[in-house]
Image (cartoon, rainbow, N blue to C red; front, top):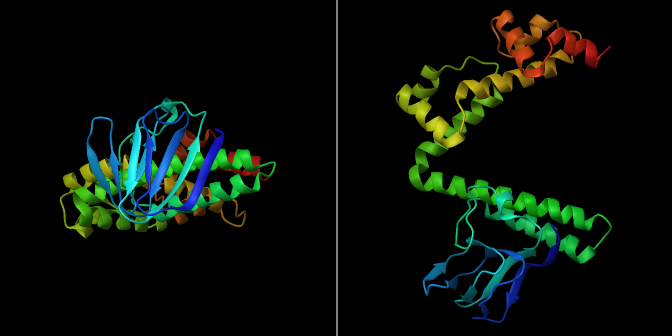
Amino acid sequence: MPVTFCGYHTHNQNQDVIYRPNGLEEYLFLLVLAPMEFTFANGEQVRAQRGACMLYLPGTFQHYQAEEEFFNSFVEFTGLPQLDFPMSLPTNRLFYPSNLDQLNRLLQKIHQEFLLQQPESGQLMALYVQELLLLAARGVAHHQRLQNDTSLYQEMHSLRLSMLADCQKEWTAEKLSDLLQISQSKFYRLYREYFHTTPNEELICARLQLALYHITNQSMTIQEAAYQSGFANINHFHRLFKKRYGCTPSQYRKRSYP
């Protein structure tokens, strides 16, 4: 995925206009840092506020102008088939991800490597562009959720982090929904809608990861490792562990620490 050109905190002259009726041969990811007006091939005009992004595909009509200060960060790159884009990432239209600073830092890293041109710079820039696109897609989805239900999403996200950070504690659907003051059915529906999984699936995954950590401590028995990770039933723990890792906890310990 060669980067052909890029800029970080780029300033053109005030009210500068970019007009490319045939677009570029490359992809262009643009992060708007001062208000601009975008014009599309059908004549539609859209005002972009600071924090807006645009991913132009190759050969796409490009026309945008700064309202006053021309200020943006951008990267032009080739070699990425459209099918490899994250499904939720918009193309050829403005979008507003919630992680502006994170994206801008990645564009800064790309720009630094572009200027340095060290032996590893090409590989690093390719990785940074992939990360940029993935994080932009995540930021778009996050922004949309916030637009739909700001307060409840934030509360559920905070509660989810608390659950995963202290996964060894007892967490039930009744307890979680009570903390949010919503019904269990609504809690389950929103959890899957927001995080594309269930609280039980995430809790089991977090507990198994914690169990792996405890198993590395050979002063702790397998049963103690299970209990310390939140598993009250040792047989249930063994079944889940073998299903996920393909071996028993004892086999894992012997294989890792013969």
